[in-house]
Length: 308
Image (cartoon, rainbow, N blue to C red):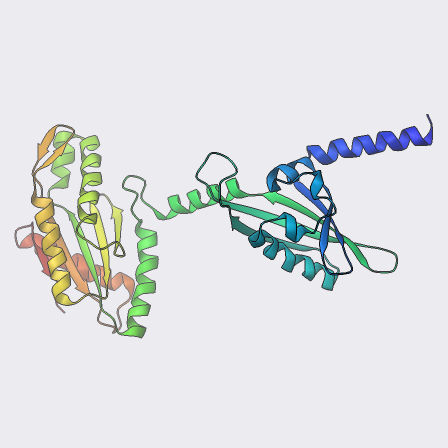
């Protein structure tokens, strides 16, 4: 076997490996005019970037969308100045999705490595890129599951306390109002015991929908567990808050039909206002819980304000 044949086989093997890599690989030449031109790209890179071999020799700025080029340009110049590899993550928004989904956002992670000659000049840049869009979507799903209730889709206890703490600090700094509603479904245990937990779950989902129609989009509505819910209201007058409480009571008292079962229920609401004193999030919620207990003592289907 001659050396020429061996070189041919090595090249052939190289390009097979190169084009069958799952990562996207781009080799660009650094020109004297500070432009970058494509020298080589493997098949996954061509498909991802929608480029062909005709792009070879053309400035990258003319081949890629401006918003994409602006991101990689900064990283390329960083590699040129340091002559060290740069690893980064970024995203860009597509005018039209690459597939038939509604996903216009593409996330990627990339490592750009300088290719330096014997004189110490950076002549080429090798970029290895990985499409991590699906991973990012999965991470977002996990984050959502960690902070939201599985049955109703509402924020859960952990997320609520996190948000409440943030809003209390903001309220303290800006001297804006903040109130917490603590509410539950009156006699919910009896519904579960007589009609079953499936009906109870459907009732809680319908309860969630009704409460949402009574509050603003920016108000945080969360489920603590069971039939216990909380609402975080900011920037409203006392009169507005009372009006919302009345609206909720009226909405819940309407007749419910759940899986062909007609059910009459009510809700009780405890309301506590943040006074900017020494309250922390747990004590404020405890005050709202005490007010809820008082509303139930008053006959249920009503609201009560916490009083020091």
